[in-house]
Image (tube, rainbow, N blue to C red; front, top):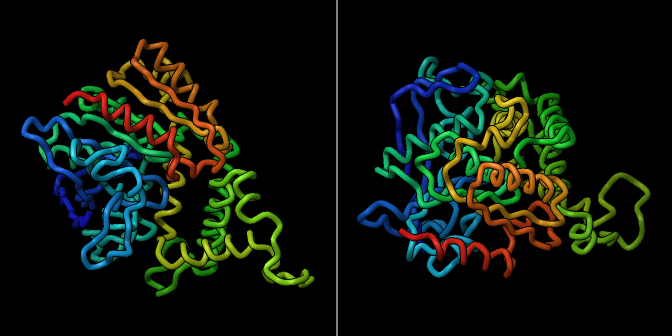
Length: 368
């Protein structure tokens, strides 16, 4: 499936949760399949922390660049583009085409850098609603995502209850635990204490805080995999015949983490990383309701599919069950799958027959 990235430009100001205002903004997006005459078959896919609008397929000039959820989206796949018109979008604050810290601030003519405001999940959904208007879509057949993308799918049902018929929430949590916030803060500190960070104005210095980004990514990867998955994949296998009794790489897992950190630091923006992790930390739809998730979900009108993975210790199944209980308290139609998968949080990206069949069946029952 050959796809073409696109951009939508919006000249109206976007007021953010923080009170800051983006005077104008762009959203990078891709589409797969065809919008039907009734405009009733659109599905919005929301991405997680380090992904982008490139959800599926490849580019004509870059055939090796395969979309991050290509196993999920396409002809005959669980989200079948023979039936649905699928939209992958890149949220604002990112570094993959939508307006973010690397974009030009119209007030200065220079990159926003550290001056780019902190954004929230609610802000992303508001910007996505502008994209839906741009594409002439009044109501989505479904909004779906995994991890941070699942928070967006959940928030769509709260911010725009009349505009989404189905919310598909995978590997999610309704709010981060203190432990999760702690992981994010360690990653941010790694970046902000890098000598090349320069208070977020490193673009002006012609440098990149690579050391901080490397460590942030290494921390993240530890939380994405389960202990069993890490042991099965790497074990205690040595890279050298015998221990080196030094601080170079001894174990395969050390080599893997360093490789992932090195690669990440070549393409991801540090200011973006700070803002995305803060958006994760801030998300809490129950905050305005005295912490009562059931009250927060009272405005939802959509049907829901919630999926969790037993080995996901970062966003455990218990957190998904909180979402399910709160929705049932409001007599919403909810399907729930707690999938026995060994990969940890990253299981939502993996091929798994039970998981894929559940999604295939759910999408198959959506009437258009």
